[in-house]
Length: 365
Image 1: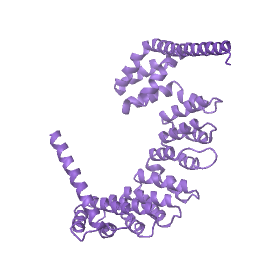
Image 2 (image 1 turned 180 degrees about the vertical axis):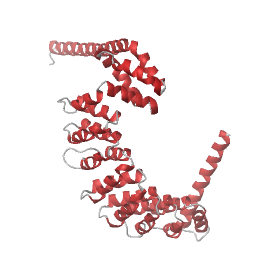
Image 3 (image 1 turned 90 degrees about the horizontal axis):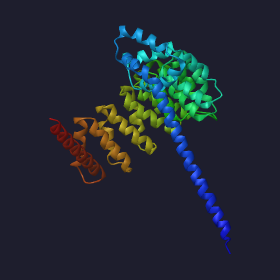
Image 4 (image 1 turned 120 degrees about the horizontal axis):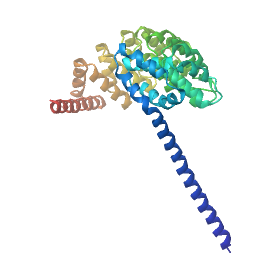
């Protein structure tokens, strides 16, 4: 038999636990609200100065910067979250003013010092601040955090390095893709693409790395940044690289770069016998390339045994303009079969898209 007293005692304990948990939740929320209101109350007298600074002309900023730079630490600590939030939203003269304010307050030096903190939260916050300030002198110090034991710190460091604009970070970012403590490829790619054209030579050096993932990310970054001066190297990767993922990304990058160097390797990449995924991406890249010379090879793919390859070829022909459309119409009017079906489907899709575009234009007018 079940002991009634024991059950009653267990229910009472559960009720007390739930009550205490509810009280704790209310207390935590209350404390947060109190801190927020206290911070807002302390920052209120100088928040107007900050708004004046953002709207001021360049020759009027010095006085406002001086007044904000001289506020006491308690007031600055209350105002800092607002400044940091604005720094990520404004640009141009307003952003330059906020960066100068941080420099006058010594925030960059403090952030550099906190990169070595025992607290992971402080290390990550310091990297974030240096990234927001685009503080190039700290790039190498932030690079060391790419091997941090805390994953969030590594992510913050990678993102910050992308904002600094210093190409010195490129080999460190690529190196962070391998080892026990890694940074996700999408984060590294985003950082590399943010560094601009000055980083292209260092990114292209990653094409010679023994690790396939490093080569793949380097190629992706070159394609996304429009590194046309590196098209020949990307084309070589499509022809010669042993890794299928690298070749797929190379094909996609060549389509984005839009250079004539990409035509021969892309035509070779769509041939029968090559991996299906590679043929699909390469066919799409030929459409992006806009080379009329690809019309014949793409037309041949309309009857490919793999429907995904054939569909990619049909869509690519549409992107080639009048020559591609003419090839599709000829195929659609030809003998019944898979090629004619693919051509008709592509033309129908284009017609629907064109009609939708016309409707939107009429509505806009």
